[in-house]
Amino acid sequence: MRRNIVLLISFILLSCSPIRKYQNLPEVRSWENDIQKFEQLDKSDKYPQDAILFAGSSSIRLWTSLEKDMVPYHVIQRGYGGAKLSDFAVYADRIFDPHQCRAIVLFIANDITGSSQDKTPENVAALFRNVLKTIRKTHPVTPVFWISITPTVLRWKVWPEIEKANSLIKEICDKKKNTYFIKTDFAFLSENGLPKDELFRDDKLHLTEKGYAVWTEIIKKELNNILK
Image 1 (cartoon, rainbow, N blue to C red):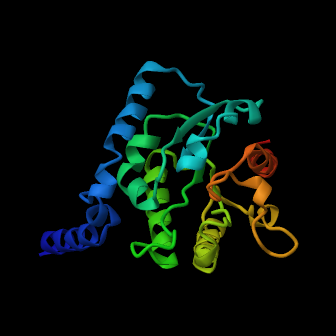
Image 2: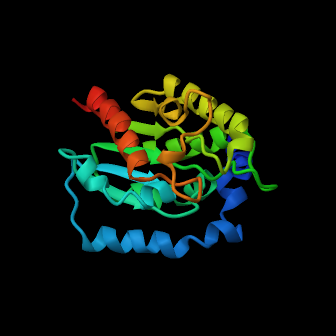
């Protein structure tokens, strides 16, 4: 009887799992090649055990000065364009498990974009919680930092929903040990409350060199506060 109850509970949990919901979606499976490239790098390249693993969407991938900007910290860069938390719910173990690292920094910004496929802020928070749970299986005490989703002109019409998702994720971070929310929106908004044009490329989404300089100052300060 007890075994049957355990099996039933396991089935319910599996059925409710974000991984089960997303793992066979074409938009998620389309990133398989990118994940395999990461796995090849894990085999071919050697990384210091005290490196900080930066993972997430295209803003991480396009951060060409990351290694220089984070000195004296060593870094591992694992970003791919268009990444969503629903991808990371599926691929998180393959991205994070291979690495001994001093800290993990996440920026994933494509779950709420203004499209009909958008997730709710509550969905986004639940997926973050799931990704964090996967990370904690192999990195139980490693500091994990979430860079708040940036206010951008391209997605300004859904900024209230993005802002709510940020708020819900901050609540999770505040309640979890060794988990930290890095607030950045204040630095990207002008006095009139709109995104600063000079910090974004022509696509009104990705950061310019000045934008990355702003990120560097804020993120490095948070890393220093916790890691030093």
